[in-house]
Image (cartoon, rainbow, N blue to C red):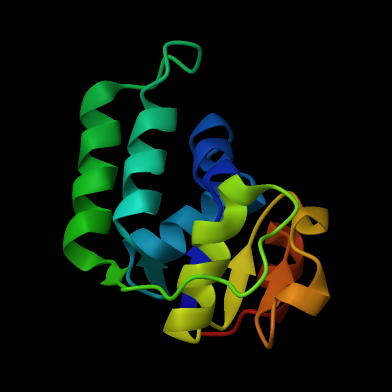
Length: 134
């Protein structure tokens, strides 16, 4: 199964490791799902996770980023025909569509109007976990 994880999912997983987002990160790190990404997403993950406000352990962050770099499904994404309401979300949907991902998981589903998402399932962490089966 191929997924794309919005940055808020990765951040939340580190803030609350036993939450639904924490379960999703564990699925990625255990190679039970494949994380699709591109360089733009990888850079955003790293920049956001290293923000002082979060006070995350930098070694842990680097380990996670290195795992994504080594084990992620790297996609050369095609641009969207129509931009999302928040253009910063475009890379996530572009990668999801180009990778033919099963899910784009986000805490902000309203940022991804279904009319622009083609056949990609946009799901909250809880919705994804409810439907996920190994």
